[in-house]
Image 1 (cartoon, rainbow, N blue to C red):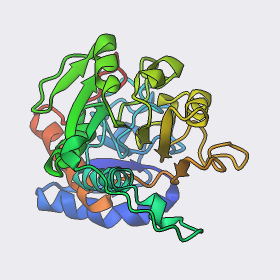
Image 2: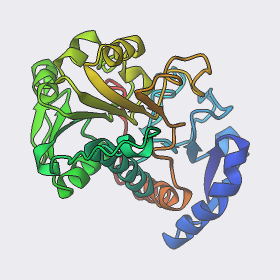
Image 3: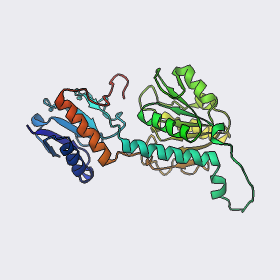
Image 4: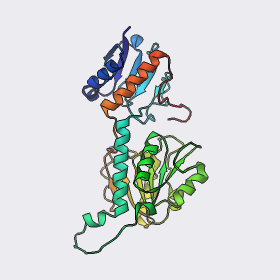
Length: 309
């Protein structure tokens, strides 16, 4: 029996995903008709990117699941027409990319590399950084990405504390809830934000919580733009409480040219490049979920609609 899989993403994505998806289906022995067009009544699974033209899921009566190509589901999870199971993307390639990006920017701040990269006056001013074991890093958001980042930084020797809104089992020392957030931030030399974008996580870093960080702390955000109150961060940078910020995600993308982050001497802007779904590794995740659906097994990485991720 042929399984009909609809690929619903922007047209430019198709050349990147067609061959890896078909190869992954074949590796699992699945007979799949993967196409950009199928009659809705015939579709068994939808491989989906939230920026796709498809926004109305009501015609897909036969479909068993929507398999998201992105780690973030904030642009789809509240779609009122979506009554199908929704699986988010947990892609090993994306996880590796994220850990490399975060590790690079953590080490940049830890070693004080900027003082030598930008040294127009040719000042000979040796600065010996502390050891990693003398630095405390807080990871806000301990899902798949946050946990992988925490483990990487611990292997480099840093003291790492994780924080989540609800209690979570982890090998990493953890805090949770509002009181736990203050505890996690109050001793953090750096904070890395990897929370999902939900109403409950909006402005996690705001005037109050930024003030909980020690003077001279650094902020690194490869998670979601709305996690930070932009004006509060700028104020904390201007008054010297926060020493620097590296930001990969923003409320509006591309970041508008007039936004003050661009010109701020203590802000590094990167254009949403910390982690991106990798077609080869993501295709294997999609194929495994199709196999599970056909075998009547639970889907991987199902989204909790109540929590929004």
